[in-house]
Image 1: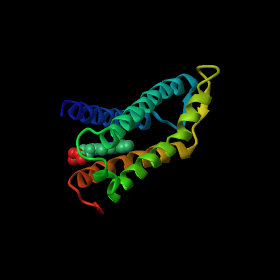
Image 2: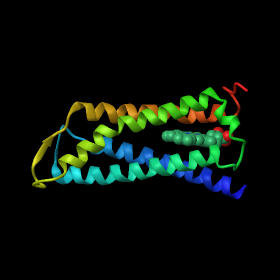
Image 3: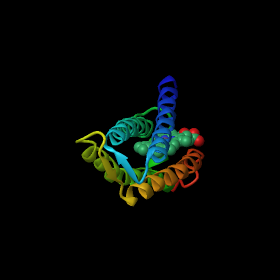
Image 4: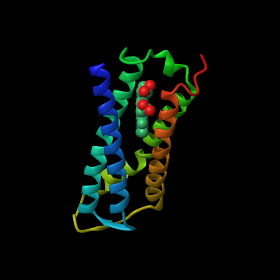
Length: 148
Ligand code: HEM
């Protein structure tokens, strides 16, 4: 019970961190950014990456770690698989912005870099998908989508 509670807590804290970092990235983005601003974005993005890994670890342990409900409750639930698919999609969408921040932070800190519009819409899409997942989580936790 205590382990499950701890994992749920970690799961939630990671979600808060992911939302906070993604929202910060979107707020800090401009059509052009200096390399030093890109360095700051890359740091925020690193926190986002760590939070996503922690979230995944806590989620996988809640699912397959023998704490809480039996694994089959989630394995045989299509809403759970939809939730996982959205999470993976968010992860894939975050690759391009991450690589862009990391590559372009190097060089003269004052130099301006043009930001591709794809970075804006990818971050927006990530946040939009993120807001759907808690609804799916609430449904699956109540057994909706279970196919036995
Ligand atoms: C951005 C990604 C995610 C979000 C926003 C999210 C959100 C949530 C929320 C809100 C709950 C609580 C549901 C409730 O008690 O009503 C939950 C529970 C859970 N999540 Fe996630 N989750 C995410 C990713 C994952 C991943 C990647 C996994 C597995 C690999 C996972 C596995 C679980 C499990 C097993 C539970 C327990 C459900 C239950 O109470 O029966 N989650 N999640």
